Length: 349
Image 1 (tube, rainbow, N blue to C red):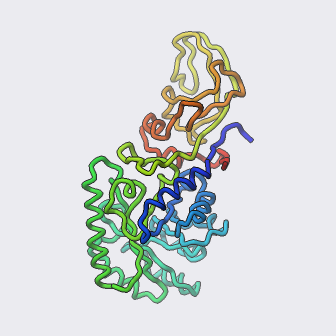
Image 2 (image 1 turned 180 degrees about the vertical axis):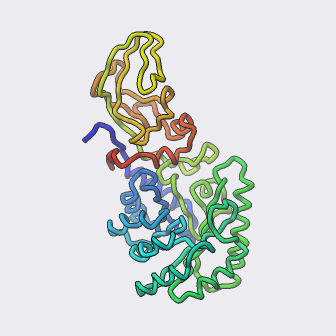
């Protein structure tokens, strides 16, 4: 096995999931969002742990992400947060997933697939409360229920919306989205007082920062792994990072002043220096934008081939966080984690 690998602490994953679950009122269900391969942590392992910790359902982005979960024997409801095109409706039926729908969805084609499979396909209605990515307008919810109900093989499971600014210091937009969703929920309940619809708005940032964003279902994502969505979101539950990125030195050499290093010679030694090579690159998910600004943690002062290094995580009393790496790379922690490629082995401890 190559010396470059990711370590995921499953005990900390469980601890984080329990803290999130325990923070919710008894009437709220919880959906663990494990899209993008569990934000790089491994969707199957993260899905199994979430189910074992009492999470009632899982969420991914596309139906293809449901396949490994079903193949692994995970049978809880799986929600699809992105819109599914008709060419993938068969996969929705095969995996018994719950697709997001709105006015852009070909409901007739979806109904036909359900009929062919002799099944009822439950759908989650996407609602646009202010992100403007997908979804019906909140005021059109009742009419959309009627539209779905006009198809014999489709059934409304519930409604959800995406929060766009819940991780910002200014919470006004987030509260505005929550108010729009709340008004819609009241109208739906007045129209269908006996329906047990699922209403989901609160994402990771919403759960920690926007109290009025929680309806009947919580939808935690990145915080399951101990990562805050931004510096403006308080870690009020004491969640802990679960992933670390490791490698080792494979080559050490001494260079004189004026030597260029790497592609483009973007770094030129200002004086005689000892340099070390670590077998990690952008194809592993370590951004090239960290050139000449990223750091690692070695376990010795005098570096030699075989010495262990940490690119993300802790070593002794020092640490490198995902937020630090993201800031240096001018991106967000989500992109760092989702960028870890399949060629980097995951070690679960």
